[in-house]
Image 1 (cartoon, one colour):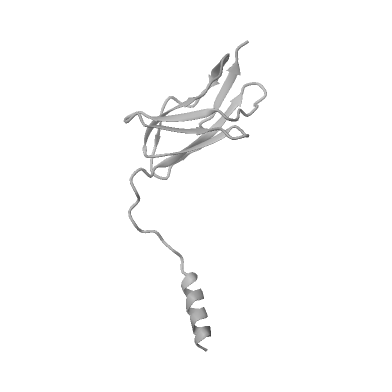
Image 2: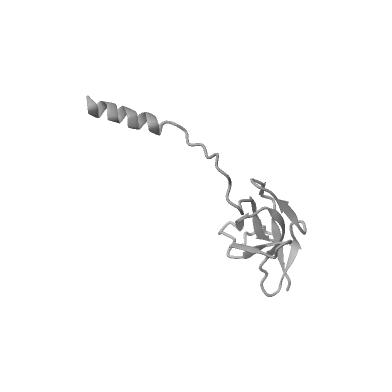
Length: 119
């Protein structure tokens, strides 16, 4: 009988939702995401370094594109400039706006780069 009471107490305690009402740690901000692709064929460019530079502090946050050309960066709140790695003979055909402001919980998912190859 005691074993049944313990099992019931444990399972009912596990069913309660956990809500985090504590203060958020400093540095929690938002997400910047997009794609890097070649112009014309819309071919995704994998393994390209994408850097977000905080305009106020100069802090840099880097990631690389995945197989589908996509990238995601988690950054503290602030205003950022985005840069993408170009290789010899390449230029940017289209890039995101010069700067963007990211706040807590923001998701900016439309920061796409289009790269052309100069021949």
